[in-house]
Amino acid sequence: MNIKITGKDVKATDAIKSYVEKKLERLEKYFGDNFEVNVTIKCEGNEQIADMLVLVANDTYKAVTAHKDLYAAIDKNIDILEGQIRKMKTKKDKQNKEDSIKQKELLNAQNEHEIENEVIKTLYYEAKPMSVEDAILKLQEKPQNNFYTFINIDTNKVNVIFKLKDSKNYGIVEPE
Image 1 (cartoon, one colour):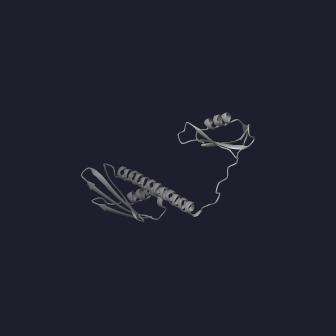
Image 2 (spheres, rainbow, N blue to C red):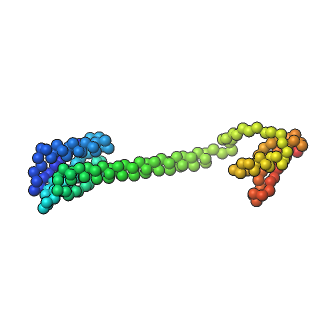
Image 3 (cartoon, one colour):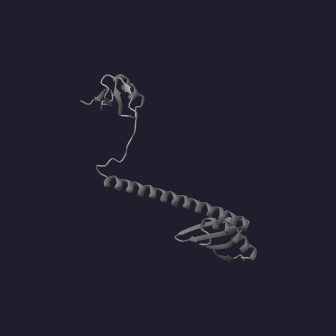
């Protein structure tokens, strides 16, 4: 952390410098020691003004606060800077997350185009002997399913009952 403190119309005393350094340690949890801070303190009328500029890699954060007490202005600036940093960090994290989701979707789309004419998923089920009417009832129990496989009691063969596109009627597949 590189700190530069400048005083205009106010002397930057050792007490002020140590207070600023102590308060800026709160920002180390975001950047480590890899940032630079320019602090300017000045007096205008009854107000003490603290101006802080934080430079990190490609980002710049700035806070300017006026208060009757210089230490209160410094505290307020640290709170403002910390809020700006958290907001930017959240924004970057969200952007990185969205980018990674987009990359996953792109990879999935590429993989879908690469695999052709292969069985890529197998489902196992238990085919129970039942009548066609019972099979229709079982299919109606699970509206998300479009078909139901069962053993037809009358023919003792595997049949598939399926919903037609009108969603009111059913079709049946029977072996010869």
